[in-house]
Image 1 (cartoon, rainbow, N blue to C red):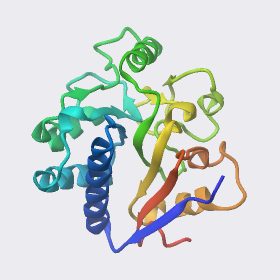
Image 2 (cartoon, rainbow, N blue to C red):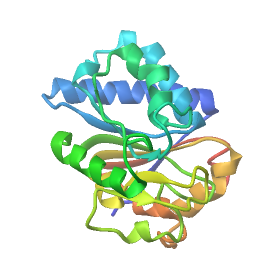
Image 3 (tube, helix red, strand yellow):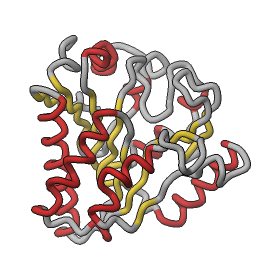
Image 4 (cartoon, rainbow, N blue to C red):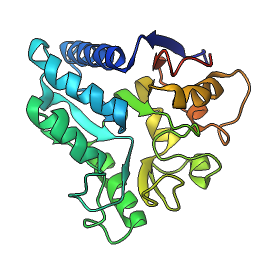
Length: 240
């Protein structure tokens, strides 16, 4: 497998603007080629900045958001109206504004009896509406090297027969989450890891090192079929 590409931008604002433009370009090109692109969004501060830039730049794009299928790499298993939900944040920032209609959030705690039931219900949703391949998967990376809700040393890192898994005892609150597995995340044409800030620099360096394990740094386990790119600002790239 080839080494990931690395793009470094001046700061978080420049990173968000570049990402938004690149995503809109990819989606427009996919639709022009006759595909109905499916994407997986991520949460976090830099993702929120990206989402606001998508709303700002979208009026000048050729993207028909009613023909974009939207998912998330992971979600917090909290009530559906919780401000901690990645889905709610993204809807408020851009999805409602751009007219996205094919939006598939992971079940909330008031929509499933427990987190495992939520993960299984979400797998059914993927079987019903998934195409088998994402156009772009976007993932943040934690200071510990986690991606989605796949944390260092957790058993979910080794799951190979599921699309989505329940996570309990998360080292980052809230403790219960639903996450796509590596197998699901890696079924993508392009995989983008997005990081901003000095606090992510050590994890980024560990993910890109020649040697290392997925159990120590889960970000080492994700890759795209055609492209894997780390989009960083200077602070996040400072240990490379």
